[in-house]
Image (cartoon, rainbow, N blue to C red; front, side, top):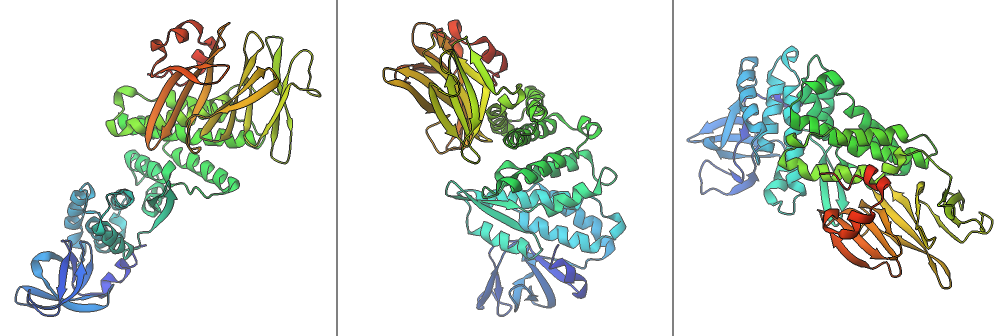
Length: 480
């Protein structure tokens, strides 16, 4: 860590560039040829002075030249200089756009300060600035200066990983500094510092989408363990917004664990219930504006896997007429069989197989025996609704997705039948193009076309009369 910082002691006097697009010139004149363009945070060796310029050497670019003395800050890296460096670091820590300069001061402080006086603060600051720089670099508005700042901090050993999502490159800090904060424990790092470190190291958007199932399972287990390092005693000392952020992150991690455990045939109720409890524990009065989107995202993740909290059921006869049972299909597949009093699993009314998880306990039959709705979850963050419908030529099976987009984050669920009217009530919630949408719908059972929809069920008369009591009791779509 801090590759450039490791050689600082060998240099008599150092200078940190404080301004972007600073010219390194061939001589001590503003009209001299430009040798290179320097950026804030660049580290230079001072070799002399001429007029109002410093004679310097840039080890990163292997170039010598002159720079105006007002565009740099010289450092001696002595122990008595450490408090001053820390004071500047504290200022830069929360200054957007000054991340590369702040990280340079972290490196200088770590070299100047006696080892026994270094606590978690510089590492917490480093991680905070590196993460903010990564977010800036991932923005569509990122300019040339951000790319230059990334090169500067790379010289101090700060590393990033990148992933492509929806045609956009997502840059993520590798979290080394935050790992050091967590390794220090409660004796050297405050509860707030450990909480920030845990949150930074467990971001959903910094999970490699190309991970294989076993790798993803191991990563999710590790993320849950990292979040648990902020124990109950430390959690109680945190401010309201930080408590909420930890709860939201835990609520987002545990549904993935529940999904994976179910897929592996392991008990998953405790994991799913933990996710529900964490989401329910969020204090909405302490929910910061910047956390509203995270709350919606956590609710979608929990909602997608909420059936894992219900007792498993391999066979569920419904209304004495229609029911479903499951049996293995091709390797990795589960086949759903629609049955009734006259048709058992050997001669089902309909059959459809899936690589997703079939939540048999979710099966709800239409009172007249004309249809059945069933929740099927192909991904940890995506739950669909299968609708079995009786037609003139037999039974049809239709798949209703949370949104008309590639599987991402969302769920759709059965909310009730309208007796005699051949209508189905649904609740949908999904994130599409970065926006969260929640809708309550009335569908025609004959065509599955949406006849009416609203942002709240209170605006739909049929929801007021026919919404299913079990759905209303357990759904997350009715949260305020």
